[in-house]
Length: 536
Image 1 (cartoon, rainbow, N blue to C red):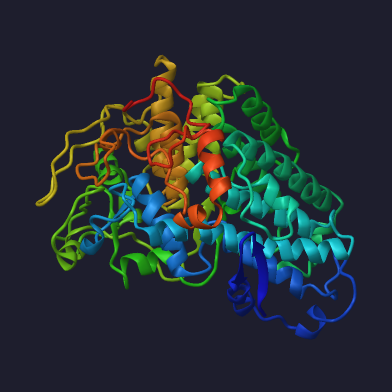
Image 2 (image 1 turned 120 degrees about the vertical axis):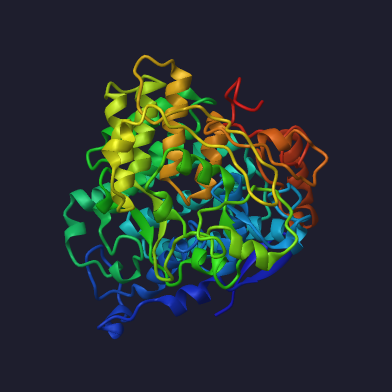
């Protein structure tokens, strides 16, 4: 099936649906799923195939895992190095990659076009089906809107201004005008609130306890829509904290709405959001591709804190049997040598891929309490709970000993080929109620960053927003902006294909939508409004 979406000057045949169709799980009664008739919220006999396949495609493109290479371009080569979780090893990429702020045209095109095209191709088709059936209050639409928001908040956090409001108005047109990032976030919250309303009504009406025909297409929560509402509220809290420095009034409003929602947040590891979609992409990244290894920052914090999660996150290096990491931005002369001398992610081929976890929620609430004073909860208890939840999530022992560590800090970095680096942080683990707000924030953000591994884009976004945790300088870059060595990337450039195919709207985004006329790595996003900030 070829579905064509109009892109202004050109028409591009979309094939993202094919992967979703091929990956749909078998059912015991396939004929019922494809029988005629209008679907109802709790009826397993309706024509749900055309609805379900689009919902499954949307799920696989929140954190893109619809194909291995799409995940590589969108998360492994951008977010994970910028979050200093993982870095690349392939020597042929040394000059043209995101680590050195000089990604190739192909990489830049893939990151922008993949998510926009794959998400909206299914979203438009699903909207057309549901509108025709008069089902725009159906839980399928609430679910679809939630998934689109989850994906697009990641996209705007990479770039800043993106096409958003105008995309929704057009029947498949993606080459439209951009919104400012503030406008994007306003739209995201509006759409997320509607999704939460629809899904909450479905759950509270008792529909979620029935056998949903869409359960077979749910590769995250297996048809449990109470958990989907908790995920939606937790996503809302994450997004509220993201805009806290730029718009504290609305940030507080949305945070409290999420916290006080009757169905609540993800507070237990049993509600963590993982997608199970076949092969875990990181398994291929470190194995068959041999392109990713542990980054120095995460390893030096884990070693400094004597953190038991180090052995859960990484494997020892093949050559030495030691846990070793590589500086982000370092040029290496031998790919094979690098593969054997640095630690790989510890991930199984069929392990699910994390979206959002209870530990992150606990740390978000700890920040809301300790730094912003928006809630009266005990910040120390929330902080410690975040650590405990992360240890339990990774099946690591020793959480109480770790929580009471008031001495150990990040260690320095050395290896045989890269520049050595002295520690950049003196923050300890143990909570200190007498500390000032910035010290409390650094403590929260450092532990949150460790806990949400390997969520690269999220780790990078939170470090950009707050300045914490503290990172090493990047020793080698291929960009004229030398300040990137110290402060890292604030965003990534748009796809060059936008310059060719959407030139007027592209230039408008640069000149009038908050980027100051420049499409570069160093321009701060709207929500990146904290001053002063570490490294600046």
